[in-house]
Image 1 (cartoon, one colour):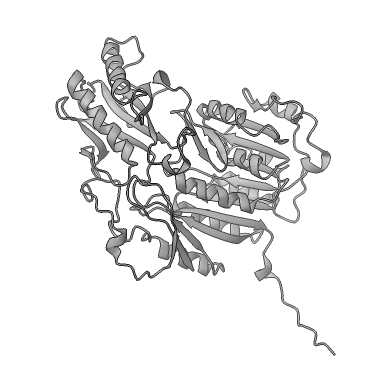
Image 2 (cartoon, rainbow, N blue to C red; image 1 turned 90 degrees about the horizontal axis):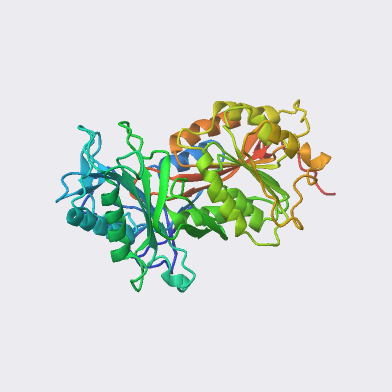
Length: 490
């Protein structure tokens, strides 16, 4: 087994990749974090051998034990990889602390030189500190429940078509979302909020040769819980739409919707997923978020249909905007549904031959695992999938692609044959190793699915996490079949 590694200095775009065996001859210092905040900040737990997360050996052993001898692992950018960060803001207004909580506490560790952050996140944090100090903004005090600025979300877009492709990562622009301790923009502190937004835009915005700030948003939150965001969002300055290019498509991400922190690693994973999906497939993208995975397949694999199912209704707007930028020649039936995958999951499975699952850290809902095992049983008989019209009756606010009517015909596209399709492939994308192990074991225990291949991605260098892409195929697999005696030729 070989590791595919890519390394570069912080802030410099990736240009070369190297392949090394698991036990590399290069000294561990070549892949060390060299971060001044290590051990005080809770973000990173592994200082050396960033290309080889500690959990990787366990993963290799697990897959070998269940009969999968090969397991590829990709460790893209090792420093400056994080393009999305949520940071707490505490301390006095003249010396604000912006960073993460110390392990096991609510004491914020200031991390101005974080080696995991895209360098422009660190630059935007420094600019924000200057604004807090100059404008006398009061950071939030958890004990007293007072203060003005609670958290900040920094998100970097590296998709600027005005720059050469090789320079886009280095000059990524930061969308800044301020979490303000008030109910709305009509609060008495709104003057300070607007002053801070204007400070960020004036000093980091469009007048610079390489703008640092993409836009400024605000989220209003007054809850005393640990929940970072409230339900009220406002765009203040800069570009409203935030675009990134991954999986060969342009993706829109609102500050309220989930986005992958490691943009380049996510792009590598999407390209690997695309190779696992046959052309012309009918795809169900479950736990879909803004539908990035499903839409990338619609664009690259000429799918017959793509159904995206997501419980977070905030992702709908990002999905709609992404669809608008899909190539005009796509003849795929596309829909997005606001639904909980723990409720009647079987209805979303029937009618698709490929199922994508990208669950949260807790893993798959138990009801979905049961449904996958049930439909793979030889005794299961598929009932025809409900038509789009029938689904609409049971769902308050679905989204159906109705643009470009010449190439997309939602209502008439579901044939009788397609409506009775059953999944032959399940592609599982996991961000938590322990959850994946449990779900994998359950899927394989009934012998109705077998693991065809698996790949690991170093989405979070310096931590104990790895992202797993596992491809399950229906049936017991070749290894379960009895081998007949070879007939000797006469």
